[in-house]
Image (tube, rainbow, N blue to C red; front, side):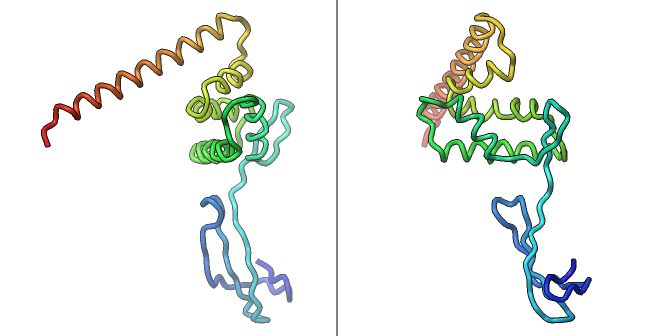
Length: 167
């Protein structure tokens, strides 16, 4: 690492800390030649490969903008969208891949969006899962209803089992 002041090719790390949400490391460095200190930030790169084959850096704001359209008119706040984008980025980074196809990013969005808002999920899924007919929507709605019923059964059986447990 070159010193930005005297261009010495050596520097000493004085302090290292996690930055932002853990996706970067902030290092405080000192030049042994001139004694001045400077900060560097290290991040891992994550590239999204578009349909055209062009790669570009992953952008949470692009995730938010894409999901915002599906959430139009729904009770979803900007904070909800920011949290969704963070969860999507964390899932993608957890895969360990340095590059991901843009379509795969859309598929990763589906899970957190389904938890956030079912109607927005259906809107988004209709594009990313290429719904072509009313039957595709009906199938997706039936699956959502089935999952909701299973969740309700699990919640009610959990409540019943806790009622039976003596204190």
